[in-house]
Every structure is written in C-alpha cells, then in structure tokens.
Image (spheres, rainbow, N blue to C red):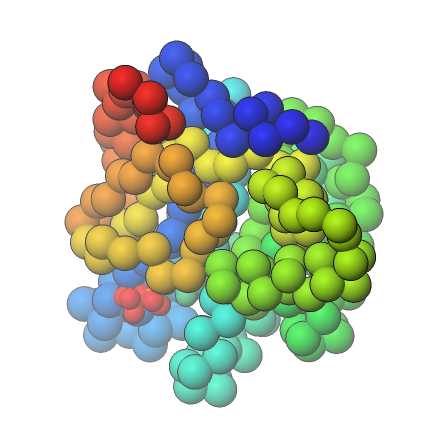
Amino acid sequence: MGTTQVTQQKNNSMPRHIAIIMDGNGRWAQKRNLPRLFGHKAGAKTVEKVLKLVVKNKIRYLTLYAFSTENWKRPKEEVEGLFDLLKSYLANKSSELKKNDIRLRFAGRIESLPEKLRLFMEKVENDTSHCKTLDLILCINYGGRQEIIDAVKKLLNMNPPNVDESLFRSCLYLPDVPDPDLVIRTSGEVRLSNFLLWQSSYAEFFFTETLWPDFSEKDFNEALESYAKRQRRYGSI
Ligand code: FPP
C-alpha cells in the first residue's frame, strides 16, 4: 500500500481513524475510595459507549490502548484483574460484533500474553475477520518502541537491498490500517506514553481533563468538533 494512501487524509472534517489513550481509571476509583480495578471495570463500560458513538459517526477505525508493555510493572493483582476483564469482555462478544459488522483486531506482543487470554482473542478475531464497517483494534501488551524494534527484526530477516517508508510500514503489526487522524487522551495527562509512535507522526491530538470512565458523548463530540477545525498541512503551507 502506498505511503500517501495510508498516511494522509486531507480536507476531511471527520477522522477516518480515531485512537484513544483511555487514561484515568485508577484516579476515578480512588476518588470513590474503590479499588483500582473498579475504575477499569467502569472504563470497560465507557468502551461500549464509545463504540456506539464511533459506529453512529461512521468512523472506519478505532484503536484503544488497553494494556501497554509498561503496564506489567503494576501490582500482579491489577495485571491479572485487567486480563480477566479483557477475557470477560471478549467472551461471547462475537455475535454482537458480527451483528454490527465490526472486526476486532489486536496489536502488540500478543505471544507473551497468557494462553487463556490469547485463545479468547484468537476466537473473536477469527469470528469477525470478514466484518467491514468498523475495525476495532485493541492494543494489548503494546509499545510503540517495541513495535518499531519488531519491525526492524522483520526487516533484518528479509535482508532487503533498500529500506524505504513503505517497506518499513509493511513490517508494522497492522500494515493495512491507516495512520490515526485523531489521537485522544483522557485524564489531563499530555503525553504519548509509547502509543503508536510511528503512526502518530501527523495525527491531530485532543486532550481532555475528563477521566476515561466519565468520558461522555459530549466529550466525544468536543473532540470531533476540535478536529474539524484543524488544518492539516503535512509539512506543506
Ligand atoms: C489507564 O488508566 C488505563 C489502563 C491501563 C487500562 C485500560 C483498560 C480499560 C479501559 C478496560 C478494559 C478495556 C477493554 C477494551 C474492555 P490508569 O489505570 O493508568 O489510571 P490512573 O492514571 O488514574 O491511575
């Protein structure tokens, strides 16, 4: 796929691909004197709401940062709780996703995840592989630097005579997925945290103070309105 095709979407007021750093679950729970895992559970409900908004707005790709390569540093019970939450999210998800023509895909170092979780992931991925209305991409055990290193390893194995942008891109986890047009981060943090480093080169960013479990249709619409006002020049004038 040509670089221009996958990286640039000029003069379009709606993003084709939205990527979200769903931050603030822990603080949401702490504010209520609840264990952090309750925040993640509330965050999973927000995922459902946002999915509906994305379908309603005919967005073609949605990428969600669900577990980073750095999240292994969290207490064992939080990591296991997050994996359990993902498993229960994925269990019995196929029919609903198929009904809405949503293809569920994953990005990250999937091979290092617990086998039980991987089986759930593989099942939903296979069951929905023919769906075409929306690609929902969950980044699990994902790191942008790790993705770049994994791409370099693939390139070394290919031993190509020359490396250009398009060949490099073909070695990323999901080479057919276009770059995100809009990256949203909740909870007031203003950083990328190793998310889609290669792909975000020309993304527009929207930051909100809202904690992810509280992220509402109003916040979503604000992000879209803000995006619609941006002038994307990709280095030109
Ligand atoms: C960041 O908040 C959030 C995560 C590390 C996990 C995100 C997971 C979910 C939203 C739920 C599961 C997802 C799906 C797709 C069902 P944080 O814990 O860093 O919050 P804090 O900064 O307030 O501590």
